[in-house]
Image 1 (cartoon, rainbow over the protein chains, first blue to last red):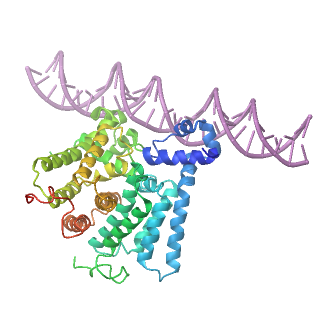
Image 2 (image 1 turned 60 degrees about the horizontal axis):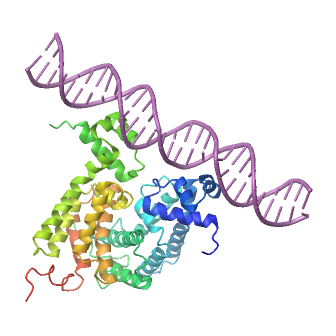
Image 3 (image 1 turned 120 degrees about the vertical axis):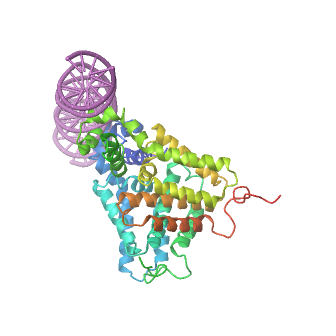
Length: 199
Length: 199
DNA sequence: ACGTTAGTTGACCGATCGGTCAGGATTTGA
DNA sequence: TCAAATCCTGACCGATCGGTCAACTAACGT
């Protein structure tokens, strides 16, 4: 095995354990045992368990934050482009997706996780989730929830190795496009689907 | 009769806390505090924390088990019918869906949760997940994962009250049907798709 | 040679965990 | 009135949690 610093190895082990067993259920002692070191050593490299989690999750959250900023500034960017960028981002940070998806709500008191959920709210805002009809909301929820959850499940069950990433990417884009662009027209803010029906 | 027993109240409180804060992060002491009783009292009504979880989750799992059995025996039942029954089941047990969806994998050592994931495997089997193409697998994953996850998120964020259940049901069925029956023909080869395959 | 720094560790801390237990209330049935 | 059953509780238990700390080792620049 290539020379990997203990710092990086600890982060990798923690990520795997957090994702499969859960943050709360993973003790620093267990992480230390898996790395063949001591608990005190873990706390030397990472000041606290929360900061260890932040160190793991932050890159993905920063990435998403940057993506959303680029959308905001370049107002002309179409939703279809965002979908593609979003899928790429999910694939890029494939390993941390299960963490934020399955345990993000539970760990909302941890700053980095709170930030993650706040940013997802921005994504929802971008797609006018709040103002859409029930059907629109559900399309958005099923699409992104489904994609993220499926990636999470695949990662968790160890199926990621079996599936070609390019196939995965292409198939996800097709499915997302079908869901979010049900009609021939674009996802443009004007009308995602039909005008809101009477309620 | 209307008087809610402490037993039922404890179960309801535990369900809400398990779903929002997580099983591991919810202590028996907190459940007791929320119910205005003592931890020992909780352990009088439920022999252990695991059995409390089982008491909460079992009805939904039993329900799903029964649904799958009825599918197995009545081989003629079509997929569309199953989808409808499945959505109804999810809506019926709306409150426990976040629990098994978000924490099922993490709590696989708890018998009732292991049973839940095993049954979900049967659902996947029913849709021939393993033998399908990457696209088929993803359609299944995004569809059911998306629906379950969206229900979980809605429940968690307290949006359930805002949305009319009938609207919800109808919209979910439309979306699932679009995803699982993309073309004119059914998803599954022969047997399950058509009760009377041509000979 | 020396001091400095980074890395590592066992011992230890207070807090909290799930769970046990003996016993105090309260109700019920005879 | 007595006794059994039911419900509830404070005190307590061993285990484990995240985190601290002083001491130790090894490497490096000077």
